[in-house]
Length: 298
Image (tube, rainbow, N blue to C red; front, top):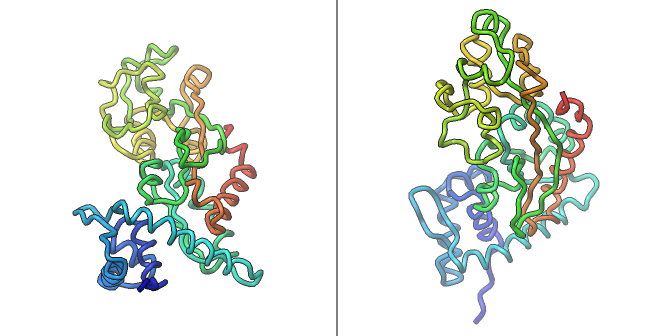
């Protein structure tokens, strides 16, 4: 006899598949991880298949789990569309955005308020992790990255161009050897990314400027930390212009020669293009970028 799947179990299944862990799924659903685990076990018993491979770092879908996820996620999208069809009902659920630190912390975080006000039951999570990896592992719904996606599984569009420049304080420039051309950078200290953290060619700004890695003696994984090091007068740093604009003590160094152009790309999974909450958050991001385009052109 054909078994009927419990919709509640499927909701827990979708949450674990998206988040990769029982604890994170529990947090999203407002229950403890043990409750999530019980629903997953119940679903696996119902279908007679193992849906997840259990690893120390989390849960990964098995081949059968991948097949079931396609069906379960489609059902979840349909349920969301029904909820969203009522004008009096705002969007519900969680949308997770994976973005580079610059655009995440210095742009999105301070502008998300109106979207939440219009949708009281919507939660937006902003993560500063490797973007495409997060999408492919279903750890995020939306990615904002500096590298366009070439995989057919993803929808990719250019969000905006932005610029970077070398920055330092007046005190640093007055104290250290004069900088009249790019070659003079060879005698100056820089703060930049840890070598192993440069996971995209587009993030290797210093190589584009001809700065030797041996001069990057303050290495970290954070734009904020790089900026703070430069603001202290200890060194120079390559920063997005819209980020550096938040700190008036920083001044551009050889702006005509060191200005670099990069692009932000908005990426989602193709299979989720009709999910109302994800579509609305994408629209909101586009609208905010368009309203503030001058910020990215500083």
